[in-house]
Image (cartoon, rainbow, N blue to C red; front, side):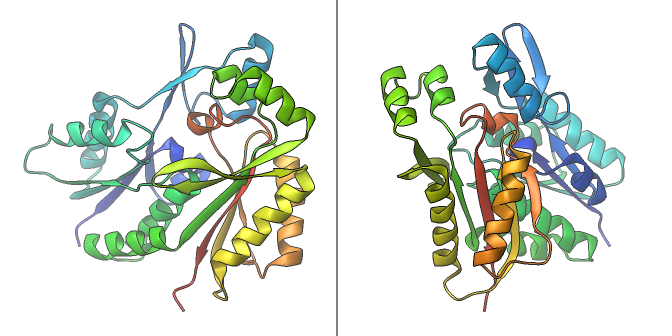
Amino acid sequence: MPRISVITDTDASISLTLSEKLSIQQVPIIIQFGEESFRAVYDIDDVKAFSRIDSSGRIPTTSAPSPGQFSQEFKHAFDLGADSILCFTVSSEVSATYAAAKTASGDFPGRDILVIDTKSLSMGQGFQVLYAAEAINGGASKEEAIAIAKSVGERTHFFAALSTLKYLAMSGRVGQITAGFANLLNVKPILTIQNGKLDMLERVRTQSKAWARLIELTKEKANGHSVERMAIAHVAAASSARKFESLLRENIACPDEITHCELTPGLSVHSGAGLVGVGIVISKD
Protein backbone atom coordinates (compact mmCIF):
# COMPACT_ATOMS: atom_id res chain seq x y z
CA MET A 1 0.00 0.00 0.00
CA PRO A 2 1.42 3.43 -0.92
CA ARG A 3 2.62 5.48 2.03
CA ILE A 4 0.85 8.85 2.19
CA SER A 5 2.39 11.74 4.11
CA VAL A 6 0.24 14.55 5.55
CA ILE A 7 1.76 18.01 5.77
CA THR A 8 0.20 21.25 6.97
CA ASP A 9 1.25 24.62 8.42
CA THR A 10 1.12 25.88 12.00
CA ASP A 11 -2.01 27.98 11.41
CA ALA A 12 -3.92 24.69 11.80
CA SER A 13 -3.76 25.04 15.62
CA ILE A 14 -2.53 21.46 16.04
CA SER A 15 -0.15 20.82 18.93
CA LEU A 16 3.24 19.33 18.20
CA THR A 17 2.35 16.41 20.49
CA LEU A 18 -0.73 15.57 18.45
CA SER A 19 0.97 16.07 15.09
CA GLU A 20 3.81 13.79 16.18
CA LYS A 21 1.33 11.13 17.30
CA LEU A 22 -0.38 11.17 13.88
CA SER A 23 2.86 11.67 11.87
CA ILE A 24 1.74 15.08 10.57
CA GLN A 25 4.54 17.40 9.42
CA GLN A 26 3.99 21.09 10.19
CA VAL A 27 5.64 23.94 8.32
CA PRO A 28 5.87 27.02 10.57
CA ILE A 29 4.49 30.47 9.94
CA ILE A 30 7.25 33.04 10.60
CA ILE A 31 6.84 35.64 13.36
CA GLN A 32 9.07 38.69 12.99
CA PHE A 33 9.92 40.97 15.94
CA GLY A 34 12.16 43.60 14.38
CA GLU A 35 15.28 41.77 13.20
CA GLU A 36 14.43 38.58 15.08
CA SER A 37 12.53 35.74 13.41
CA PHE A 38 10.73 32.94 15.21
CA ARG A 39 8.97 29.83 13.97
CA ALA A 40 5.38 29.76 15.21
CA VAL A 41 4.74 26.84 17.59
CA TYR A 42 8.34 25.56 17.39
CA ASP A 43 10.13 28.67 18.74
CA ILE A 44 7.31 30.80 20.09
CA ASP A 45 3.82 30.14 21.44
CA ASP A 46 0.95 32.53 22.22
CA VAL A 47 2.05 33.15 25.80
CA LYS A 48 5.61 34.05 24.80
CA ALA A 49 4.40 36.15 21.87
CA PHE A 50 2.09 38.28 23.99
CA SER A 51 4.57 38.63 26.80
CA ARG A 52 6.88 40.21 24.26
CA ILE A 53 4.11 42.28 22.68
CA ASP A 54 3.04 43.68 26.06
CA SER A 55 6.61 44.52 27.08
CA SER A 56 7.53 46.12 23.75
CA GLY A 57 4.20 47.72 22.89
CA ARG A 58 4.54 46.45 19.33
CA ILE A 59 2.78 43.83 17.24
CA PRO A 60 5.14 41.61 15.21
CA THR A 61 4.67 40.91 11.54
CA THR A 62 3.92 37.46 10.19
CA SER A 63 4.91 35.83 6.93
CA ALA A 64 4.09 32.63 5.10
CA PRO A 65 6.68 29.87 4.94
CA SER A 66 8.89 30.17 1.88
CA PRO A 67 8.70 27.69 -1.01
CA GLY A 68 12.11 26.50 0.18
CA GLN A 69 10.68 25.53 3.57
CA PHE A 70 7.98 23.47 1.90
CA SER A 71 10.53 21.89 -0.43
CA GLN A 72 12.52 20.76 2.60
CA GLU A 73 9.43 19.19 4.17
CA PHE A 74 8.43 17.50 0.91
CA LYS A 75 11.95 16.09 0.52
CA HIS A 76 11.94 14.92 4.11
CA ALA A 77 8.65 13.09 3.55
CA PHE A 78 9.95 11.37 0.42
CA ASP A 79 13.23 10.50 2.16
CA LEU A 80 11.18 8.77 4.86
CA GLY A 81 9.52 6.64 2.23
CA ALA A 82 6.39 8.52 1.24
CA ASP A 83 4.92 7.76 -2.18
CA SER A 84 2.34 10.56 -2.00
CA ILE A 85 1.97 13.84 -0.12
CA LEU A 86 -1.23 15.60 0.90
CA CYS A 87 -0.45 19.17 1.94
CA PHE A 88 -3.28 21.10 3.62
CA THR A 89 -2.68 24.85 3.90
CA VAL A 90 -4.32 27.76 5.65
CA SER A 91 -6.78 29.69 3.48
CA SER A 92 -5.24 31.44 0.49
CA GLU A 93 -7.50 34.39 1.37
CA VAL A 94 -5.35 35.23 4.40
CA SER A 95 -1.89 33.94 3.55
CA ALA A 96 0.56 33.22 0.74
CA THR A 97 1.18 29.79 2.28
CA TYR A 98 -0.85 27.93 -0.35
CA ALA A 99 1.04 29.68 -3.17
CA ALA A 100 4.38 28.83 -1.53
CA ALA A 101 3.46 25.16 -1.21
CA LYS A 102 2.27 25.03 -4.84
CA THR A 103 5.53 26.58 -6.00
CA ALA A 104 7.52 24.07 -3.94
CA SER A 105 5.61 21.14 -5.42
CA GLY A 106 7.11 22.11 -8.80
CA ASP A 107 10.53 21.15 -7.46
CA PHE A 108 9.48 17.50 -7.58
CA PRO A 109 8.40 16.74 -11.16
CA GLY A 110 6.78 13.36 -11.48
CA ARG A 111 6.18 13.00 -7.75
CA ASP A 112 2.69 12.77 -6.29
CA ILE A 113 2.09 15.98 -4.32
CA LEU A 114 -1.37 17.46 -3.89
CA VAL A 115 -1.59 20.90 -2.26
CA ILE A 116 -5.06 21.62 -0.86
CA ASP A 117 -6.32 25.09 0.05
CA THR A 118 -8.52 24.36 3.10
CA LYS A 119 -10.17 27.78 2.70
CA SER A 120 -10.13 27.88 6.48
CA LEU A 121 -7.85 28.42 9.47
CA SER A 122 -7.26 27.37 13.06
CA MET A 123 -9.38 24.30 13.85
CA GLY A 124 -11.41 24.85 10.69
CA GLN A 125 -8.19 23.85 8.95
CA GLY A 126 -6.98 21.58 11.73
CA PHE A 127 -10.00 19.28 11.73
CA GLN A 128 -9.53 18.61 8.01
CA VAL A 129 -5.89 17.71 8.62
CA LEU A 130 -6.63 15.50 11.64
CA TYR A 131 -9.40 13.53 9.97
CA ALA A 132 -7.30 12.96 6.86
CA ALA A 133 -4.30 11.80 8.91
CA GLU A 134 -6.44 9.51 11.04
CA ALA A 135 -8.05 8.02 7.95
CA ILE A 136 -4.66 7.38 6.34
CA ASN A 137 -3.33 5.81 9.53
CA GLY A 138 -6.39 3.58 9.43
CA GLY A 139 -5.59 2.40 5.91
CA ALA A 140 -7.59 4.86 3.77
CA SER A 141 -6.44 5.66 0.25
CA LYS A 142 -5.39 9.14 -0.80
CA GLU A 143 -8.72 9.66 -2.57
CA GLU A 144 -10.67 8.51 0.48
CA ALA A 145 -8.68 10.81 2.78
CA ILE A 146 -9.31 13.79 0.49
CA ALA A 147 -13.05 13.06 0.41
CA ILE A 148 -13.15 12.78 4.20
CA ALA A 149 -11.30 16.07 4.65
CA LYS A 150 -13.65 17.83 2.22
CA SER A 151 -16.70 16.49 4.05
CA VAL A 152 -15.26 17.59 7.39
CA GLY A 153 -14.58 21.07 6.03
CA GLU A 154 -18.23 21.39 5.04
CA ARG A 155 -19.38 20.27 8.49
CA THR A 156 -17.02 22.42 10.56
CA HIS A 157 -18.02 25.67 12.27
CA PHE A 158 -15.91 28.01 14.37
CA PHE A 159 -16.86 30.95 16.58
CA ALA A 160 -14.66 33.05 18.86
CA ALA A 161 -14.96 36.07 21.14
CA LEU A 162 -12.28 38.73 21.42
CA SER A 163 -11.38 39.80 24.93
CA THR A 164 -10.17 43.28 23.97
CA LEU A 165 -9.61 45.56 20.98
CA LYS A 166 -6.30 46.72 22.46
CA TYR A 167 -4.20 44.58 20.15
CA LEU A 168 -6.20 45.43 17.03
CA ALA A 169 -5.60 49.09 17.86
CA MET A 170 -1.86 48.41 18.27
CA SER A 171 -1.79 46.81 14.83
CA GLY A 172 -3.75 49.66 13.27
CA ARG A 173 -6.73 47.49 12.35
CA VAL A 174 -9.02 49.70 14.42
CA GLY A 175 -8.44 53.24 15.63
CA GLN A 176 -7.25 53.94 19.17
CA ILE A 177 -10.34 56.02 19.92
CA THR A 178 -12.70 53.32 18.62
CA ALA A 179 -10.89 50.68 20.64
CA GLY A 180 -10.94 52.87 23.73
CA PHE A 181 -14.70 53.38 23.54
CA ALA A 182 -15.28 49.69 22.83
CA ASN A 183 -13.20 48.63 25.81
CA LEU A 184 -14.88 51.24 28.01
CA LEU A 185 -18.27 49.82 27.01
CA ASN A 186 -16.92 46.27 27.45
CA VAL A 187 -17.70 45.35 23.83
CA LYS A 188 -16.65 41.83 22.78
CA PRO A 189 -16.61 41.21 19.02
CA ILE A 190 -17.75 37.75 17.91
CA LEU A 191 -15.69 36.25 15.08
CA THR A 192 -16.36 33.43 12.65
CA ILE A 193 -14.76 31.99 9.52
CA GLN A 194 -16.39 33.46 6.42
CA ASN A 195 -15.10 33.24 2.86
CA GLY A 196 -11.79 31.85 4.08
CA LYS A 197 -11.20 34.63 6.61
CA LEU A 198 -11.73 35.16 10.33
CA ASP A 199 -14.22 38.03 10.22
CA MET A 200 -16.38 39.85 12.72
CA LEU A 201 -19.91 38.49 12.89
CA GLU A 202 -21.41 40.76 15.54
CA ARG A 203 -20.66 42.69 18.71
CA VAL A 204 -21.80 41.74 22.22
CA ARG A 205 -21.31 43.58 25.52
CA THR A 206 -19.59 41.76 28.42
CA GLN A 207 -17.65 38.52 28.38
CA SER A 208 -20.47 36.48 29.91
CA LYS A 209 -22.85 37.53 27.13
CA ALA A 210 -20.18 36.90 24.51
CA TRP A 211 -19.62 33.37 25.76
CA ALA A 212 -23.36 32.77 25.93
CA ARG A 213 -23.61 33.93 22.33
CA LEU A 214 -20.83 31.55 21.25
CA ILE A 215 -22.85 28.72 22.76
CA GLU A 216 -26.05 29.89 21.03
CA LEU A 217 -24.31 30.06 17.66
CA THR A 218 -22.80 26.62 18.17
CA LYS A 219 -26.23 25.19 19.01
CA GLU A 220 -27.72 26.81 15.93
CA LYS A 221 -25.10 25.27 13.66
CA ALA A 222 -25.54 21.85 15.23
CA ASN A 223 -29.26 22.21 14.47
CA GLY A 224 -30.25 18.88 15.96
CA HIS A 225 -27.18 17.01 14.74
CA SER A 226 -24.78 15.49 17.21
CA VAL A 227 -21.37 17.12 17.65
CA GLU A 228 -18.82 14.66 16.29
CA ARG A 229 -15.76 16.53 17.48
CA MET A 230 -15.15 19.74 19.43
CA ALA A 231 -12.16 21.94 20.17
CA ILE A 232 -11.66 25.07 22.24
CA ALA A 233 -9.08 27.47 20.89
CA HIS A 234 -7.64 30.27 22.99
CA VAL A 235 -4.91 32.89 23.01
CA ALA A 236 -2.85 32.80 26.22
CA ALA A 237 -6.08 32.10 28.13
CA ALA A 238 -5.92 28.50 29.31
CA SER A 239 -7.87 29.21 32.50
CA SER A 240 -10.64 30.98 30.58
CA ALA A 241 -10.78 28.08 28.12
CA ARG A 242 -11.38 25.64 30.98
CA LYS A 243 -14.20 27.81 32.37
CA PHE A 244 -15.72 28.06 28.90
CA GLU A 245 -15.62 24.28 28.55
CA SER A 246 -17.68 23.95 31.73
CA LEU A 247 -20.31 26.28 30.26
CA LEU A 248 -20.33 24.34 26.99
CA ARG A 249 -20.89 21.05 28.79
CA GLU A 250 -23.75 22.58 30.80
CA ASN A 251 -25.53 23.75 27.66
CA ILE A 252 -24.60 21.42 24.78
CA ALA A 253 -24.28 17.66 24.39
CA CYS A 254 -20.51 17.58 23.97
CA PRO A 255 -18.16 14.75 23.00
CA ASP A 256 -16.45 13.09 25.95
CA GLU A 257 -13.14 14.59 24.88
CA ILE A 258 -12.78 18.26 23.97
CA THR A 259 -9.42 19.32 22.56
CA HIS A 260 -7.87 22.52 23.91
CA CYS A 261 -5.49 24.28 21.54
CA GLU A 262 -3.68 27.55 21.01
CA LEU A 263 -4.78 29.74 18.15
CA THR A 264 -0.97 29.93 17.50
CA PRO A 265 1.04 33.12 16.86
CA GLY A 266 0.56 33.16 13.08
CA LEU A 267 -3.08 34.00 13.77
CA SER A 268 -3.18 35.23 17.36
CA VAL A 269 -1.03 38.33 16.84
CA HIS A 270 -3.86 39.59 14.62
CA SER A 271 -6.60 38.98 17.22
CA GLY A 272 -5.04 39.51 20.64
CA ALA A 273 -4.62 37.78 23.96
CA GLY A 274 -7.69 36.54 25.79
CA LEU A 275 -9.57 35.21 22.77
CA VAL A 276 -11.63 32.08 23.40
CA GLY A 277 -13.35 30.17 20.63
CA VAL A 278 -15.06 26.88 19.87
CA GLY A 279 -14.85 24.72 16.77
CA ILE A 280 -17.18 21.82 16.04
CA VAL A 281 -17.62 19.13 13.44
CA ILE A 282 -21.27 18.13 13.23
CA SER A 283 -22.34 14.61 12.28
CA LYS A 284 -23.69 13.73 8.84
CA ASP A 285 -27.00 12.35 10.18
